[in-house]
Length: 85
Image (tube, rainbow, N blue to C red):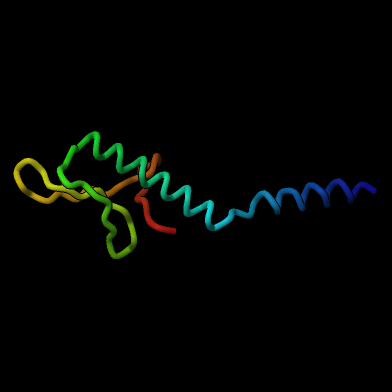
């Protein structure tokens, strides 16, 4: 009889622990957009866009007033690189 509540609790936790890949991808895109907007507000480069390196990590890239192309790594709120899952 005491095992039933434990079993129900265990199954509930397992169900909550599953993260849908589409939800994870959407969360990544949201973090990427927020990081891009923050970088754009800070740096204000012309023709700004998101580019990806060989590890699929996102960077903010655009042209500075001096004509030089600048690339700045996008980071999450914990200052970790934003890399595609």
